[in-house]
Length: 483
Image (cartoon, rainbow, N blue to C red; front, side):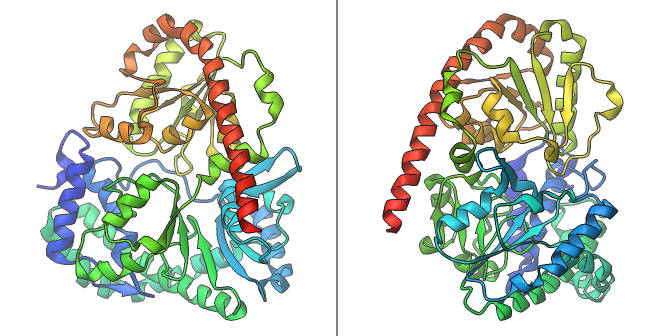
């Protein structure tokens, strides 16, 4: 029986079943540009098999087509082609990581900053994968910053070439998926089609990467985050999601067809615990480096001012973190409707829902009066975390990233997620300022604990001040080491 017919979402159970199937049927024996093709597919298969999501989930396109902005960005790319030669390092970034620097009045990319900090004095070429077709790129602090819309558009135009990969992919993967029992028939066919598209994408971006390396022979270091190129052996990936011992994007079974790829994979992660997980799962110790989480680290350096800590009390602000996958979206929707039904209890509070970058706004027709809904690109999540007294989530990497901001964490219990408690404990560690509550119990809980949440501002400010001083001193120590 397919795993996803279970009523509960069992993540660890699904991963174990996935690993067993991968070992038994060897899903990794097809490679392009030295990348096992299945490494691009296993996360989607994992979501489908666990019941966490389906092909019909309401998710947003990776970027939205805005014709005028698209044309402008094409022109920008073409007129910037002279900058594509003779660079020392190459960085593949993503538009949605651009953050406004209030001190310098420009945008910076948190992941780019991490790569640059490691390579002072080097001339970088930065490619930006589009997310929402904005014009932020015009105000970045980088001289050689090229929007990749033209490259992405050509890839889309030529996507019919996936048909040349389909016969081999179908012959190789369809029978394996069928015998494995991981997916239902309708999903197997969709996964196979998606696999052929990924095979085409790997080859397309492989050609592009070879051209860039040819034009920049001095560039021995290449970095990538969420840019379709981060799985290439030549590219050092910067961690862009939560990693635990069953993370489908990062942790693979110990079989010969994937072993060499994992051993040679270069990656930057954000904690020693994660480094140990990867090394214990076949990564080479010299290829796994630990750096501070750039989304938090550089926000504290560039956006937090000393006078922030002079405030005696902050806004009564609550931020809800969205998520794709029907079981998560359903829980958050019920939570929000509970607030709306009891909005008088929350009359003094600003409450916002920030959607996941891939999440479609399913809340438009609810006519919400109290909760404001923002697509991810419309706000700075880090600015909101710096202001918010508390954070609400089902399960998200933001739970971990909100800890340096001292937010009180409210975890909404999801009865359909069998492993939720384990995941939350991994994200929160020993962070004490948190609670887990039933969705329907929140209005009553809030009424009893509102004063506790308000008074938490003082503790939040203390935590943020401590981290502000730590990051400032850490930055100074790096400068000294580089001299």
